[in-house]
Image (cartoon, rainbow, N blue to C red; front, side):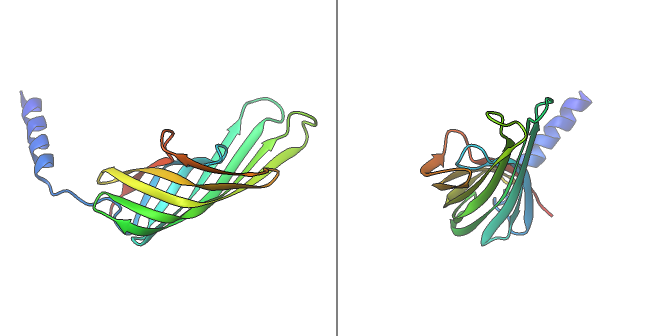
Length: 166
């Protein structure tokens, strides 16, 4: 009975607290974010400066065998053109680096790809500190990556971040 009363009191207190806007200036978010190219992305940290957000990501994979270590890292920047209490719309882009052991011809060589992805991003705050990001833009493959593509991430989600408030 005592646990039920405490739980009910907690629900009442949570329900009566004022709602905070998403994208609070000066906050840091941790989560995961991925590039349009399908290769870059991983664990991510974002800093929301109010008028823009900037972040970086790091990914690593080692299958346990010889010569099968892959890693990726990169950075992104989006300037907020418009925002509401629970979302923002930004323009900017991402630079991502991907390196993998080249397994086809010579297992001692690495294949390195660099991506430049200008575009736009929508962040939707599903709660006051959890943001889902959706990205669309152009992915230019540089170095060992050839070509370009126009793509978007809606179904696969560009990323998710949990923001810590002061």
